[in-house]
Length: 106
Image (cartoon, rainbow, N blue to C red; front, side):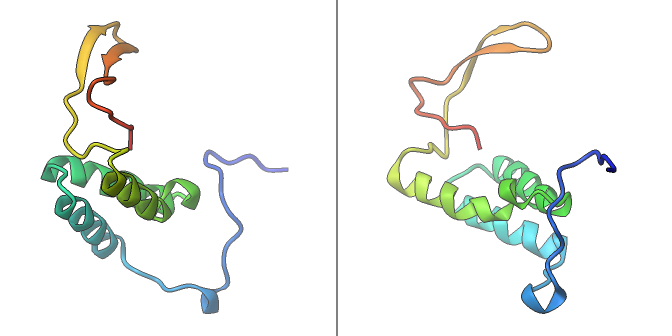
């Protein structure tokens, strides 16, 4: 049994998927979130994280999440412009006040 650094999925045969280049996909994901009200730099981070997860073979945390997060924004369970406050910074951890902002980490 070989161990790898990342959890990988079994490859899908080429006839069963559509290949999209990373930059185009990332640009599209970012545009979705900007249109929904995220700040441009926040949308860039979300787009980068989701597309990178797919590149690492972890699609459960990749672009397939876009639909879930879009739904959350539209229903009001995800705040696209949260006012998160760091109460105490402990170095490797922090106490964050996000309750009043109804913020869900993306």
